[in-house]
Length: 215
Ligand SMILES: *Cc1c(COP(=O)(O)O)cnc(C)c1O
Image (cartoon, rainbow, N blue to C red; front, side, top):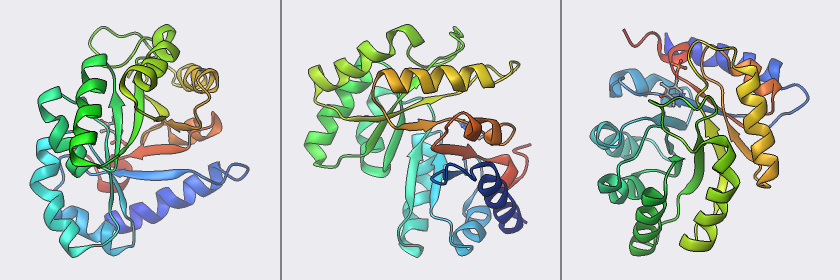
């Protein structure tokens, strides 16, 4: 099933991005096991997102022995005691959201001499329960990552409030990225990736539209 879903999502991305061709599809495989992920790998897809370090550690090293060229994105909150494992496993960490994490990542990247691409997560809806830098602090935080920790930030990521029209949140993230001179924008999920592309998403994170419902 997920192979056909993958092709359909790819066609929808192509249609939505007619004028802006470079949208990276991150297939979000959280909660799904190797048997569900393998068909998507067999179909040639290589870019995947996971939201938990430990869960990803449990399934991806084996899959990476079977399939070359996998690119893994961490899209869930990172605890500093997992920074070492995250740097070791992930190619992109999209959820840099506080000073303590920036510091832990910088130290691990030096130690492991491995440099995953980093995005800062912005809490565009300023929801108390949600991770992310408040919008008004974004540019100061991006600067601090660079100046105090020597980190290169490549883009911004957001998860709009569940019950709101996502468009204004995508527009805000794009505006913040421009202010910070960042080119990459990770926004849009199964329910709204076409809207996100219209607002300039360079990375969309699509789970259920590819893998089916997480139950
Ligand atoms: C689960 C998840 C997604 C994918 O959500 P779907 O609605 O299944 O496409 C995208 N981004 C993040 C941060 C997630 O945790």
